[in-house]
Length: 254
Image: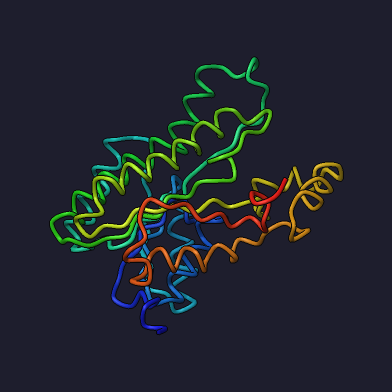
């Protein structure tokens, strides 16, 4: 049974994996046997993250590129092609947050969040699929959010992007499932990351999260690994177009 969840012999590209949730997911996939392509915008941070993983016995290589820039994404995949690296698993994790009332959000701010959280998944997903389709196999895991299905004040661009991730995932499934490529998503709840430190340090917000979440606590990045391994492995070969919420039960209750 455990062989169903093995990622041995597979290579996973995890965007935004030089830190945070992406790094935790990358390490979890590596523990299941995958080789890792570490991505981030900062080349030095990418290189260091790959070295840190190598020091832990993980097969990892850096691939610094801008996931929001079409030319950069295309060039990165061409380099992987040239190096003989086939991406079997893509995790579209790169993302940013912006907390402002809608009336204070500029068009440029809106576009930056949409590009980083949604357009990047299209661009990187497209290039990965171009290589997966001829092989007749592949896994795409898009990182959504609680906001893939629920709204919250002051995060409209993020909510729109993560809602888009859910439907982009379904569109990918509609086109690629018959070709042996499964596209699914993970919707994290409130997780302990550098992006949420400011929220955790706010006693009122921290209290709200713990009271609103049936598990009565924040999630840990490593708690996304189980869902990520499942959706990246043969165990999910007949699962497509779905979003798994890893949120301590928050989305299940009023």
